Length: 462
Image (cartoon, rainbow, N blue to C red; front, side):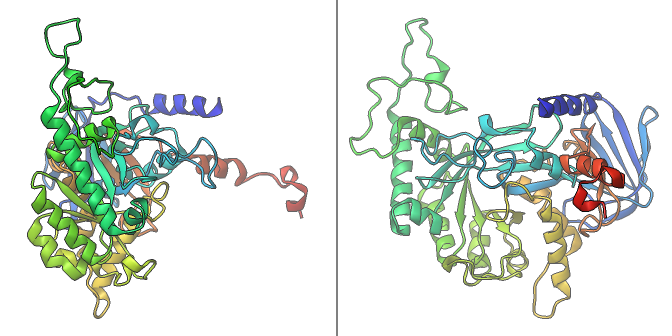
């Protein structure tokens, strides 16, 4: 009940009209496209979209002006890979973790959208530290296919979905081998078999008359936009006798096979990365994005030539598993230097709760430029890795992730350099709407910070 009341309060606080015109003046502005910060620039927002972000911009007469003197202004952070909104508290508490369907019959057909809870505290905590969007993926359980992920915003409202079913997530490295029975060879065989089942379903499943109309029911088309909506396939929709997927799972892979849905593939080992590149040659319509890639630097030229984007873990530098033996903090810098379209994600790194760490990781990559023998990135590139680059990896760079004109107005005003963990987000806009920055933790701080000694528990009074 208390949480529901707080959620209602947050919605009320965040309710100002998105049609507002806002001018943020005198700040140090970074676009998020790889360019460096510019002092004394102005960001103009109108109707929830960016109008301009540069020096010398005229402030509209009807604008609400925010003076950002001494502050930094950037696009909101886009968490490149996460499980944000799928889990609340830790410790495996029942009812608070929808990251995987351990005992369910489905795999590729799983859609995270019904499970995302915008009232989960990790969303508020990350919003308060400048994270405004996130790619959210399910975890695999009994299959190499984890299901369909979404892009969400962290706004204080009940409508978090930016793009549903944005991608399918599959495990083909060490985790995939375990899910497939114990070997990578089995995982790849399952993957190819699944895509061939999807191809067969798309080819031979005609629309079926519902009996209510002479027009085909759009839900019965195998290429409908949402493969999870209830639909029927005709009794003559032929499939092989040796199918391994449920019909829903096979239907969910049709958009992947046809290149209408991105395919995020988690691999870490260099040889696994090369095998993923080969999948692109066998199934040319696939829109592959490699996730993880701890050993990506070893095959960076091959990745660059393939044109496949990579969402990499930022600072893996220890062999946490046999597939990460060649991990190095220079991984992202070396891939970028080789021409790989790289961005940053949080896979296997507290990906349900601490996406705000990405800005610290990005700052560490900048610091690497000063370490002899290491390969880091420039400040502008580091910000790009956590803003526009992950958006571009899944085809949303035209809509989110930067302060370029026409993008959604996800804007953060920082107390200082956002890649310095000592800086804090002072104001956050999502779609041009000012967001509350209070969290459960800040409310606890307010409640107990100045508690009179007489009100403390006995053990703390002396």
